[in-house]
Image (cartoon, rainbow, N blue to C red; front, side, top):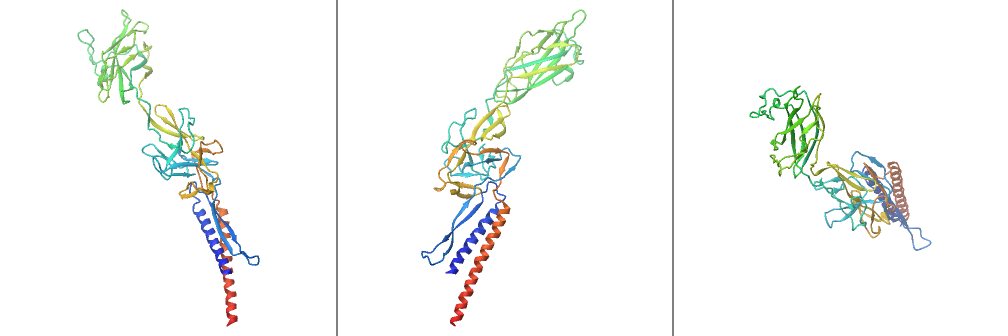
Length: 422
């Protein structure tokens, strides 16, 4: 009987060695939770008979907090406290798993995925980021939109500048007469004095350069202190009409014409999805001694914003920021907890699934109802203390040797009895 008693001890020590070895092997696995072997004695029904060895009761998982490793990725997140991230392995109706590995990424369709390719689950939120429904049934795949907003075609350009009173008349143009106007050519920089440019948008949000060229047409004299300029608006390579726009200034450099914003006929540049109806407002544009000075230029068009950043707050709120300055609250990471986490079934790759022993998942938002908070820019390392595991490894080795020695001793005793009979 001692052989079987010691054999049970050998098997137990071997199991403990395997468990410790697995802990050590996964010391670098993010979100890994170490295990511990638990044994119980096998007793005899007789009070005069010693026990019959040991048996493995369970390999118990230890869900203590692992240390954090700081990273530079905004989509690396860790849970400080209780809870698990929730993911599903398909877009709809997939198996649900739970993990502590928060190495997340965004796929080509904008879905937030975990390190195993599962779809990260989140709770729905309103535009202010407040959760509107809780529970596992309310959790959905988090999809981050790549664009935001509806494009708006440019309809107005607001421009304020100071034109130089002493600007030359372009040298390569004949003098102005009613029959022979100035020969303006936007491709010839000698045919105009100054230009300024901005970007306008068509109805689909496509960007188109808009350039305004300024031509000094009339210099002030002692006899006539007024002066004049012309402005040519080009959208792409198309000139907006009516053109040119005459700018008149009095002796003090104050603009006398045009007295109101100028509305051009629809202009349809190459590549635009539709004509643009643009109004030019020259604001407090004036003329003065000194250089050409652009004081301000603005336009009211914009394109749909493109995704520029994704942020995850400590409450698990996923926020997308777009190039047009808009931000959107996408959802809050679903955080699950269990009455008995040790009862979860291991799936590998730091993932677990529900069992009858674990109880059903209680799903809520980070930082609420005893659930841990989210630490962005960090990953949770394995909760394995290498020093403790090496001590446990030595202890298991000694147990194995002791049981092997007990078998050897029992064998010697049996051999002695056999020799006595012979």
